[in-house]
Amino acid sequence: MSSAILLGFVLAYFILLLIVAYFTSRKSNNESFFIGNRNSNWMLVAFGMIGTSLSGVTFVSVPGLVGGSGFQYFQVVIGYFLGYLVVAYVLLPLYYKLQLTSIYAYLQQRIGVSAYKTGALFFIISRTLGATARLYLVVNILQLFILNHMGIPFGVTTFVILLLILLYTFEGGVKTIVYTDTLQTSFMLLGLIVCIFAITKSLDLSLLSAWDEMKTENFTIVFNTDYKAGGFFLKQIIGGAFITIGMTGLDQEMMQKNISVNKLGNSQKNMMSFSTIILFVNFLFLFLGGCLYLFAKQNHITIIGDDLFPTIALGGQLSVAISILFIIGLISALFPSADGALTALTSSYCIDILGLKRKQNITEQQGKKTRITVHLIFALLFFICVMIFKLIDDKSIIDVILKLAGYTYGPLLGLFAFGILTKRSIDDRKVWALCLLAPCITLIIDFINNADWFIKKLTLSGAFASKLTALSSTLFNGYKIGIELLVLNGIITFILLFLRSTKTKTIEAK
Image 1 (cartoon, rainbow, N blue to C red):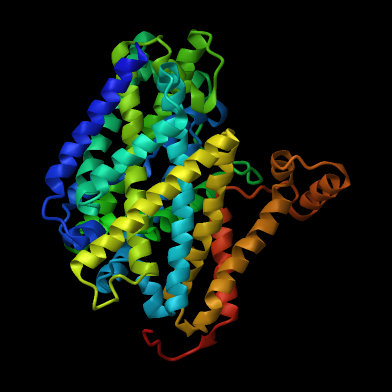
Image 2: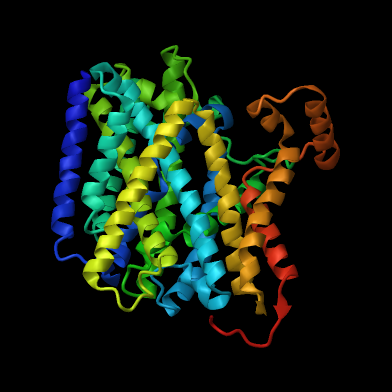
């Protein structure tokens, strides 16, 4: 299929999003942008959050994992489900009780202004890096398989995509995203399901016989029982639970949609419905991965990992319809994470850093002008970050950036845990320094533990590399810190806060 035709479908998809945005953003105001007027339909939020949590990276990376580790990623997914229980029945009641627009305002009430702004800044850094990393990966796929053939530069592609995201989030914000995410999740799931059936049909297999073939290839193994391995099932499940607590329950982007629902009970229904569906959807992505590797084996395709799905879908081995559905499914997986991140970052900066909601003398029009300015600045920042990733031009940098999520969400986890689990008080002025110290300590531990990984990434050699490897072996005896890095960071943050705190009988809001 020609690149021009595929590009035509991409543009048609964007036009559909703009039409939805036009109708949903009418009569919108700042409250619509930030919190959807607290009137979002919980069923739409639950369905749309599937697309938000399953980014374009998931769309291509989870199927690509199957060739190396089978279905072991499902261990993490089980942990996600446990984490959603904590979010639904511990964090959401807290947010609704305090009627928060920004979830980090809890830190101000419980600890102080410094803790509040520290939490917001850690979210802003982490979400900016994570969202632009995901955006880069998908834009790069579109560039390699479609736009390079048309002579369109990567910078132009990135600029146009961000401009289109701006256009449909500019006015409505959360109010619009609730509907566009629902639409995009529908297309993503359609692409996923149709691709599974198309590949199994091309292999002349039923779903059950495809499963049997995967078993033969050892793709269906879920649980890793090697306690020293990074993929050990207990570490993966516990790590997955805390990733959900940190990256969903303590993330303004994810919670912004949840607390836009009119009441707590409906928001909890949303969370539990979403968490149940996500189990099934992640299993489908893994099943698709198994099908892709069976197809690759039959057709002598040696490509593995992230490039496998786009190579098969766009390489001419399947029908034209599959190529179209893959592209639409890919951008449908991308944009719920990119548009939501852009909106949440704008909201967090305006409310948490600039104090837009706290300033009584600001008119609606002045607030809107500030919001629009911040929205444009974050779009520009997204563009710069994506271009930096392209300049580096190394997919491994994405692994490094995503690893940083363990460092940036860890202090948030420690801060909220200190606030919720203790009744101790702390000098608010010290919080920011302790929250910076914790990731530094975590980095040192991680550097020693994963010496081989860091030596390879940083191209270290000589006596220093040898001593580092020996120290790692002595201290950890082969045990590898993996997904639990965020938990470790959170625990260190909590301990530092606890050691600098004092026992008090009552806690006054600050």
